[in-house]
Image (tube, rainbow, N blue to C red):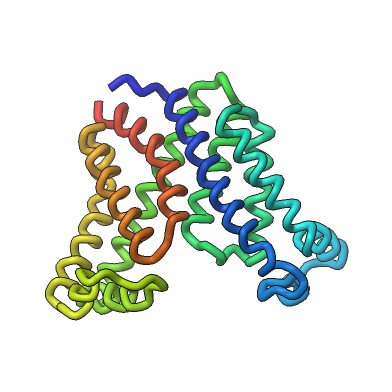
Length: 264
């Protein structure tokens, strides 16, 4: 399949813009929670930043306190919306800066892995945009995104296989029971059947450990991406983790492109 690095970069850019659009939109919907009376008011969170100098604290307060934080989210939302149709380094920079500031407000722990992957993709895209026309740099950015994508799965698999609660299915049972959504009958049966939980846990572990094989060729890569998307959709359905779908989905075109020249 003819899938050039420029096409891959453009698709990554459009998809990460969609991811950022969703992220900013979600926080805008929750904007009352970041108000001075909200559960995430800056007056509460600012105590975590007292380790910084006074000028830095004042600067952060000017950006992250309500209502300025809502304006920051609007800038993030707007830059992502425009990026769906127009490519420009300034737009990528805006999305990245806004994203980092949003992560900083919650010390980088609000959405964990999806925030990390969003940062990886935006940073790589910014470098590719700044060195537009330099094929070596642009391809290097795609390779970086692909490596980070593979590592995220493989390391997760290594961690899981080293933990007894994953090998026995106990961890998966805990996740399913902690879902904020009402589980369908089929999942309720899974939670109560230890043998099925073990099979399901090992399926996830083996899939994650084998994910580096996605670089063998584009056919194999497409199969892994398809399974990964099903995995993300299952997480959306069971746990409401839609951000993972968008953040990792934006990285998959880079992985697919890299599998094309690695496997040749």
